[in-house]
Image 1 (cartoon, one colour):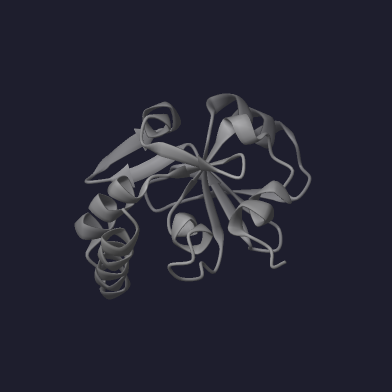
Image 2: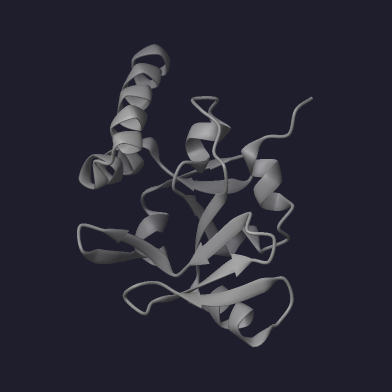
Length: 139
């Protein structure tokens, strides 16, 4: 049996009750298209814990000086929330926009579709089409 995206998230050994997969992870989990890396939103407690540990996570800053963590091999990023329309949607706010697959929380397709429409990069436009096609066949 092939490894699911949820399996890859579990392999990070982060507390599942303190993370939500953001970005294209749900597309991979549902078989819509593969995702190349793991993007997570984390609780403030987990962000604090990662700040205090050296380990496998490297603290970085984005262009707006928001800090986040990157796994040393580059396979995953952990943020305190998700930027949407010039605002940061916090981990707590994302909880109400999430769904669980195999014990792992993912941002739901509706939220992801809205975010991708807002971003409107070419890859996002393509993903919105894929999401719409998948929803037409599966909902």
